Length: 401
Image (spheres, rainbow, N blue to C red):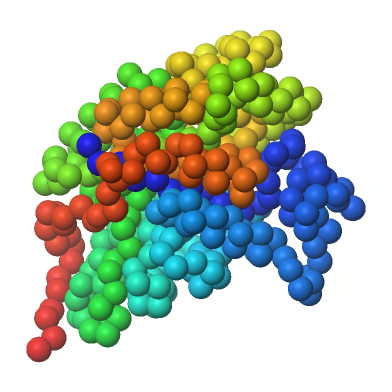
């Protein structure tokens, strides 16, 4: 089975120390004066946190990562703009921008993507998200109910694809309508961005089954991953789509020996324990509506404080979630064992891995030197799933001659 590797960029500061600690890089801390690199950045300075992100992006490219994920959160840099700024800092790196259909009209998204693609040789990937926290959605002005957000996203992608592939696109839906618009032939020279979606609720799985090239998930026990892949594949078959692919976002703490890796993970855990309760609450507000099986187990263990308790499978550690660092899980172990776990998940059907560590700059080199070379002859570029699904029933297309 093919495999490919992306990384993730830290859009709201590094977390080598507990979140908000003034020793971290960037100005994402809670102190008036910080001690980390760029910690006292002020608007107008010659160098900013974006320059550090450019360093990380270039390090990822040098170390043969194929792309980088930009997570979307209200308290972070805006991902689409960050992608645009960093595209000119790199040569081949693809950028995954996470956004909600709530943020853009379908035509604006199509037009923006076309411009980006034409300027960067098709290096944009979309991660369509729909918000996992009702509280945060209300804070940013979206009062649409959870399941309805996924219906809206499905219509959004119907309309984007219609605008992209037809100069005269007509559509009438519950959330969007179109009356003869579409991209010009020049704009359509670009490739429609590959589409990733995430979320494990019923509504999220249906959206992925209908539209996703890659369905992204968080790390779980392999049995849970196997069942989720089978479920989404079966749903995709009902839409006439047989080649949907799967990805996973997971941090990595890897060293030459198991003992060294565990010592580093435990350093994170011990440093984050003091604010674990509040951090975990914030983390839970950002994850998908469905709590993973191990998260339910931990919730029942209110006094769970032991580093070792958070291993849900050999080398798969959920301690980051407990201390409030998304995506919550990390591969912890020797280089050899981390490679073995990646191969195990790959055999289950995970073809795209988002790997990162802290600090992102140094860990990009560690992963590039000690993990990625083991997969050099198996890697394969991301490809779009063939569009087997027919034109939406509520769409009519007129070809302009």
